[in-house]
Length: 381
Image (tube, rainbow, N blue to C red):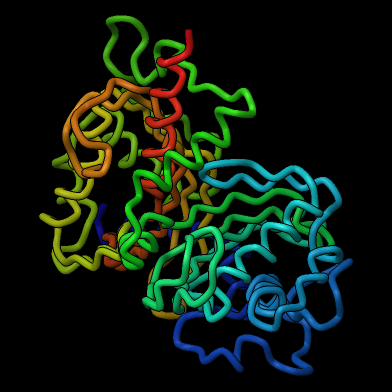
């Protein structure tokens, strides 16, 4: 991607770019500036509570009110009665389940604070908004709960929550939280923890099903030369989908050196903070190495121009394949052959045609749980 092409991509955002100039951005702002009192509305917010001046204000403020101010009851006015909330190990289907899950997490980690790192969004108040909200959570494990007896240890982890919002209510949400990072920092063995989660699913009758080809390739044909670009809305989103397809489905890992800046900062699972193209290359090949037959399937993409310069792009994706190799997923151990699905999210910051920052979030604990569940199914008579 050339510098000229990058300029074209930003210009192609059109009206969205001019609107984003007025909508709040998280970067470079203190929290009190993200939840201002009496700020005039910066965009159409039909059906939203008057306190929210734009969609970024909405997602940052309501998250803070529910989780940090403990006003859990706001879930009743900020979620529909029948939301689908997709987590990496389970799915919630009712608003009451969201309330219950929130309370349980507050009980276990009462000192946790979730700090907005960035919000990438698309949409409007007529058709609905889509937000991709990167949160850096930190705190201390001081109470008994889902993580067992309190360890007193501190932790930090990353979460990305993608929300579909219409008239003040979230009706669909995808949450990828790096639970493995928390367990590691608390000194908890992830294997019995994952087995306990898997046992809960197993006892309810859930099984891991191996349904055959994952469709990265059809029969003996090679992967498709071109990706499906239907979900993209502008040039930079189409370019992102193209190079992701080249790297993850066509295994052209050398493309990474053409897409990332030499000084790229990589922010990955287990709170990895790495630098340079070689680091991105290693992390990417390592993920594919553990699931060497995996198909990479983008589910959603959106982008916003950035006040720091350039454009930020959010991609929600799924990888589906079999644990057939050694790679980055160390806790899975020796290849088991079990089918697993990775729900992940990535935020990319483009400047002058290259990626200068990537935030990649997926949860290795969810993969370990899937392997344990499949192994339990093997023991059935």
